[in-house]
Amino acid sequence: MQTAFCFDFGNSRLKLAIFTGRELNDVVVLESDHPSAIEKLLEKYQPQKSILSSVINHDTALEELLSAKTKFHKLSYASKIPITTAVGKPETIGADRLAICSAAVDLYPQQHCLAIGLGTCITYNYINKFHEFLGGSISPGMNMRFRAMHEQTAMLPMIEAEHSFPLIGYDTKTNLLSGVIIGMAKEIDGIIDAYNEKYSHLKVMLTGGDMDFFMPHIKNKLNADPYLLFKGLFAISELNNV
Image (cartoon, rainbow, N blue to C red):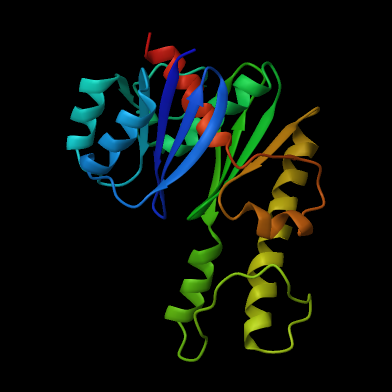
């Protein structure tokens, strides 16, 4: 079976997923995008295919390395993907959203899907049963909310997310935790409710690095998958690296 490298360069982390066949075997957090670090991984795993999803200004020499060593594809609005995009400017759609939507239709074909990504921002991505990505919405993510309250006030501290806190905060820190995490969970539930009112038999997926902070507080039924984006990248790689 072939090995594939799927790179996800987000605003917060640089990550690599390693697939053997269709099975996700490992996820590596990269310290940098310098080609020398990637070359060691190429030597270790000997992948035949690779794909890069990037929303940052990464080192372009990495693309040259991957092109030389593998069948390489850089995800963009011009890529072959298992969805169609009815939005007015497809070139403005983030590569991460394209990957999440592609995973949704790969896992749940011919069904209405709402794929929610929790990262620097929350993205709500709706794909109908005809595999058309119709758009959705974007709102601030967890750390962005913590940072905004700290930077735009004189007294509120910058805090780190925690799993344990009360609904009714008893000090500044727990007030911030409750406001951001429970507030976001209620936002997510509210958006899901609005889509459920509009579309029957809706499949809802949740993914992203902050996912575990919100799962205890979300009431709607959904499928939580921290690797949804990588599964979408793999599906796109299979279409483009032939």
